[in-house]
Length: 114
Image (tube, rainbow, N blue to C red; front, side, top):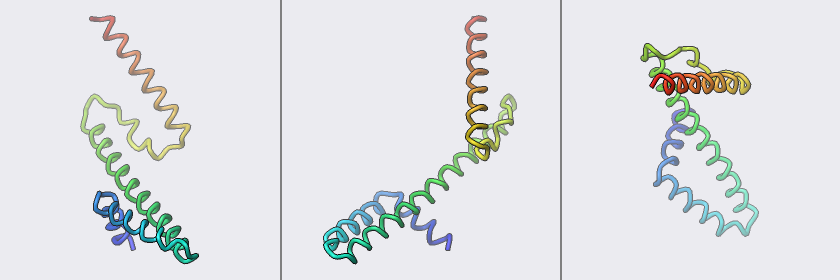
């Protein structure tokens, strides 16, 4: 079942897929005067939402893997943030605040040395 969903997610995330979905939605809207047309339009909207969420999850996961690879590849980088996307919102916020404070401190020390 995953392969067809990934295919649909890939197709509908590009302009031709959007145009097909737009044409289908307009066609259903013309038929929407009936109860069946309304059901078709509602189910199509729900299905499209699921497809968009799948594509977004794939994109986000791929981007996170790439960022983790960059962090691991850089000797000067701290590996403590690898896997942070699996933490709770509170953990992520706390880590982000700590990184921002560290960055601000590093910027001050560089500007003071120059």
